[in-house]
Length: 276
Picture 1 (cartoon, rainbow, N blue to C red):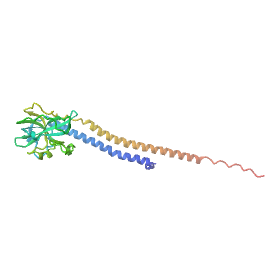
Picture 2 (cartoon, rainbow, N blue to C red; picture 1 turned 90 degrees about the vertical axis):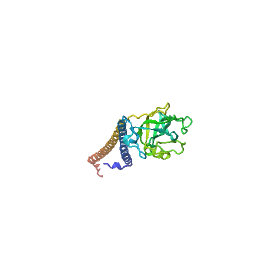
Picture 3 (spheres, one colour; picture 1 turned 30 degrees about the horizontal axis):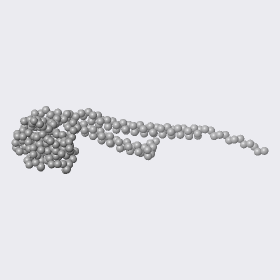
Picture 4 (tube, rainbow, N blue to C red; picture 1 turned 120 degrees about the vertical axis):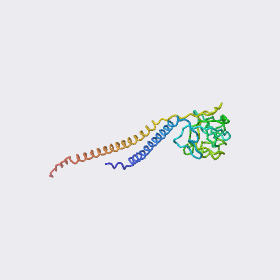
């Protein structure tokens, strides 16, 4: 009855179903992983956003990135900015406007530097590769409060290197790559500036703390993809059973027709007229 499944049309349909099922299952798990990543990030934001600043050495260390558990915690550090080694991080937007992050090393009392992301500046109108005008970092001793951020590695950020950039412009705040170019030890990770004392008259546009992300849609999409799997299998079974039922009805009709033909009496032979 089910030998029709081996016909070319049905073989193609069966292969399509077999291919779609793992794809939809994988898409469901992809959405589930996105949900879990967003939920973890939201929990970390909530846990670390309101803490009182701690000394930079409590969270940061040389040649070691910050642990994921302390991201967005506030740290305080006192020192002086090294404007001569200031860096611009290319390809950063603010309200959909192209620009740069301004990262200036803050050399603390023991000589170790914290890379401080002081904020965002708009790119030059002439070219995105041209260094724009940047508000100068405060001179003299400065006390900063910053949020702990991990280094922007290639694997973590997905941002590729660009070797053709002018001096002082880079693609990522990748501490491991930047530290060897600086003449002093550098803390792993970097700080996203919250406030500084004394406050400068002019500064790059401050970067805010991100809001918690909505996770409901990701979980809904995950469940939706898995429901599609169940619906696809159910639809395939329904179509197969309907096809089998139609074939069974056709065979039954043929059998009935043959039985009816066998049951009909044979016509009587024509009478033979005697010869004269």
